Length: 316
Ligand SMILES: Nc1nc2c(ncn2[C@@H]2O[C@H](COP(=O)(O)OP(=O)(O)OP(=O)(O)O)[C@@H](O)[C@H]2O)c(=O)[nH]1
Ligand SMILES: [Mg+2]
Image 1 (tube, rainbow, N blue to C red):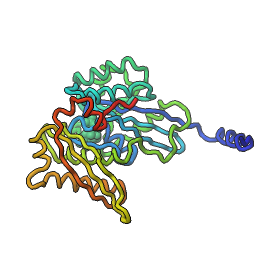
Image 2: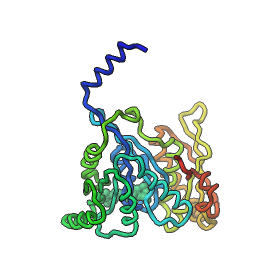
Image 3: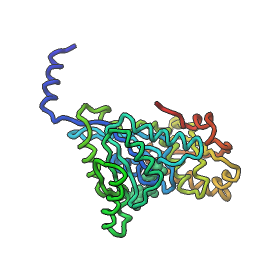
Image 4: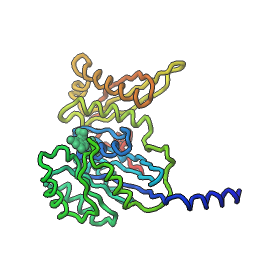
């Protein structure tokens, strides 16, 4: 051990401003904009988003670092809803599990005075937590009358004693810096958990699979999107060429869904594939040859084995 160097770095750190760092979970009903907000703060699209509820299925960790203020580790979670199958139960458990051992809870809601069973359930779980809770009333860009906000704030105040309430628009970036400021206000002092370059815990393969699932979610309607999973069977650089070969399988629950996903003369699958390829190429910064297959796995959302195979398994 080099004592001289040790001493030098210790005295050096004393003169620097104290850093804060900690974990923040983003929770709320499906579709309120949790993933959109996280992506906006990170400045990169890590979590997929869509206008269909229950888009996020796993806990997605991302890291936001400011050299002078510190580090926020975000946990984006599946929307809390009434589960109708084992996949749903897994999703809700995953979300609720993150409430333990975090430093700050960000609860996202839509700008409305409707407080449903979902909100009451979340408020009930939060009563047990002693963690600071920040309510973000998202999507304020959709408000016709800004004055309504005061009324919504009042409604939410009645169901929980929030530490802070911030109206924001994740999509437009409105008040998002206030959200970051408030998180730092409640974070404990401490060294960073990850180095400055860390962005996410999601493996590249997983992000690629999610991009394919997102494009399927965007292209499909009705009940089909909810029964879809995507697996990457192969992802390999082509020898001697700047090209990545990717083979992915879209899993669905019924033969009739398979027909819809493939579409007339394969048109739907082609659309999903080319939209996904475009985005994967941006992510990997290289050309991609993407081949998609569609398979039927009946009731996979209620099969423990298949859930595990498709990546929905408890992590902790
Ligand atoms: N107008 C408007 N739309 C938004 C805003 N934030 C998110 N959205 C839209 O709301 C929809 C849902 O966004 P997501 O980020 O996928 O929502 P989520 O809460 O992560 O949803 P789940 O993963 O299903 O729980 C998408 O169509 C977003 O573009 C916002 O501030 N304003
Ligand atoms: Mg989401």
